[in-house]
Image 1 (cartoon, rainbow, N blue to C red):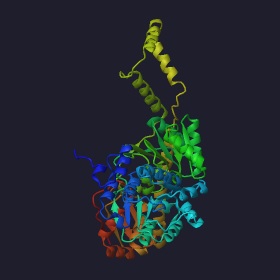
Image 2: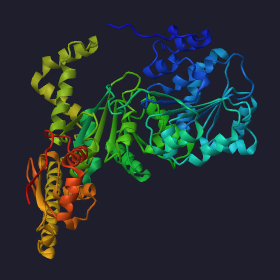
Image 3: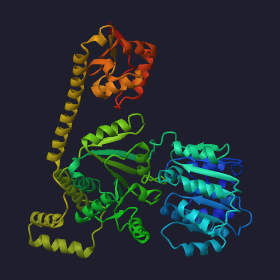
Image 4: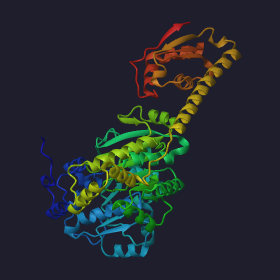
Length: 563
């Protein structure tokens, strides 16, 4: 077995090693190792791409504090975070990391007393951690001195731009004239982040920990198909079936989080909502309750849950489509943190499931598709749990309970006693909802919708042929593509894709005969000529890269079968 790398192997000052030891942090994470291994890190700008929950705070905190020789009396480091919660967590982590060096940290976030924050700044902090809006507010009020700042760190840079902080970030950069280095930490690198780095970072060193963000070995992924109109009832069934210790549940809107948390509370779960319209006191109350385990289900929007770092979240549950792959990855990253395993679950309707498959068709994500547990299955699993507890040979029974049991058995029939005990124990247990009929109805509706879609495509082609009297196709031809319904293609989707490839209108394509493993497509003379100019190989590669199914056939071969 390979020996693990320890913090002691790096040239770190004793104060930092002591602080890490007190927290029982012995082994750095991969991102921390990569950053600490860089030799000239303090002389250059830096971009670090690593997944959520990989230990980025210590990755920038350790090298920055390690190079402080004399404790400054004015801020020398500015860390910007996208949300209040992440900023507060980052500040707390940097406080204990710098505790042996007597490093002071000021936290500048919205929703909290600005005068208290001004007093923190007057107290001589070496580090400032804040959200862009509040930091800029302090700069404009003259509370925060920028001239001594040597380093700016953008934590969760993609999230900051998602939340619309670009103008604030640019104003902050412009107000810091003496900065030696800018470090950008981001899970993804969308266009906005690349543009920002191009404008403000100079020849940055790039560290990438995860080319494929979906390949998180500590997280398993599961999908339950649920009836669209009974999503909350389905959630109850899944919670009863999975039995999570801590579940972070994502909804799309503020109203949905309120409705979901209320529904779960009425169903007997300990649940609270977390959304952007709550006061800071309400948000802190919900978060603290979830952290200590009083609340087992926290129902949140994406904005409210950005940057949350909560230990031992066993399950992340997403109600409906997550929007895109990056959003799904960020949500899933709330579980499976710091070496712990986790489970990410999506509850999808039949129609959403096809979009979900398409979304992940080119990722390495392995998803387990499970049928929604019904009331009878939940009841059986509940019985099995009770049986396991009753028959557990390692469970110690107190002497007075043992004597009580022997006394009862001597007077009553043992079978009757056990039956009454089980009935009493099961009384009032939530067994979920019977949803099979609703799910079957959803499947039928989706089949009919797909059938209508295919028929509409055929009718469209027929009308085109009748309208044009086949004149456009008289000198054209029919091509054969080795791809079909088993690859996830539908007539309408294939028609639209071919139009985009060849740069033609739909009128230039005639009949499409789509079978399981091939498709015959009738082309006009113009379309056939463009197809030959593009070359069949190009068309094949384009179609392969845009397949909507995770099932791939052997490499496609297109050919002209008639003229």
